[in-house]
Length: 579
Image (cartoon, rainbow, N blue to C red; front, top):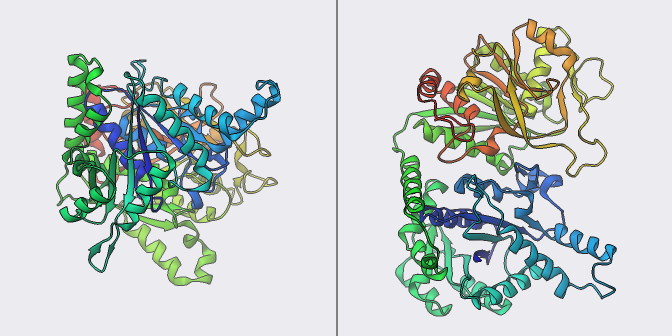
């Protein structure tokens, strides 16, 4: 077992997830199989009930697991498929131990943090590290573990103790290894790079029982040589064990930065990678991945821009839409366009805002008038809904490319029922349980009482309907009859209104495998007016963008016909994506 632990000091939120993902990518370019685990010390069992404005988005995994957004980074960078077990929380650990205690598994012994909680953590790590994460079915060679928060946090104490014990076990095994990347922060104060916070962070790390094999210093610009020498001397590490991770133009350039500073060489030595037998094909596959990555992220600086608007209710904290933004970035890079994304609070588009604050109302609508495409992502609750409905109507009538994701699909359906079917009071059961015209309803498979893990979650089939060969969306998927995307929702389009809507040209081009749930709609006489009940952003990769997002950005940039032609001619299929 080979483990790379990415821990943090000084402050949280300085990029441990990107450094962990980048480290894993570099190992994959060497031909290795890599998996990843995120440890979150909070008491929640998972991220499903965490508010997006506090914690960022909830990333949905293929098995329906609701996880920390960093697992999205791992999947995007490493092109792997993780499970709910790859996100370990304090809540999960204590829940498992308490269930064992209730069953009598501990045979009357006193159940304590040490050894029982600590052992549960390590048992989970060792089990999950062996789960295959790609189509090869092979056991991963290396497991990246990111420890959330910072060393010294009270809530992460049991996890730190578990990792100390895991390190002690692995370093004594000649077939195993443990490599600790500690991410610190070097602030620039009055023009001087300050090393004292890093010195204290390393001292805290060592006092906990862990030893830094690499100190990754987050900073605004490249570190001075004198600063690196000072950190190395003060922290008792070699010069090559200190690297600076300064701000880059895009986060996708971080792997290149780390590779240039010798991270792969350090990992090769520290993990004893020479002991892992690799055939020529795996090495060649890794080299091709690295070439593709560098080619994908190497875009000219004078790119033609594509101006898009994201209309949502959580725009004050854009991590709420992290996967959506990343999917737009992936599509833009693929099309060699510069993404200019403007965030619009949907409440600012409502008539009530015109009375409350006319300037906000006018500014919000001015943005929609100026952009080339509009995306409305998912969300919950009725705040800002009327602004989203108005947005869908604006995009439909003005022939502006529109992509509705989950709630974005539902508000477009509500708008169509109000306007095309002349039912002005139509709404969703989520917003008004007693409404006369429910365009969106609650359908069994979930619960409205118990919140955690009760929605329609995970990968589900999407079946394109007969006679939809004209569909741009289907064309983006390569003309397939069935594709699979991930879901996270409780409410569905009301099946009783489908026939009426389709008679008005509002086509539901895809449904579920039973035929009762509407998976996607599309308008024929529109450049790109598409809605999906699923969340295709969760499957978008840096080197392989999501088809609906690719189509949306391409349509906004005037490139959709070209993209559809290329896909139709090449007929290349990779996990349902066609390039």
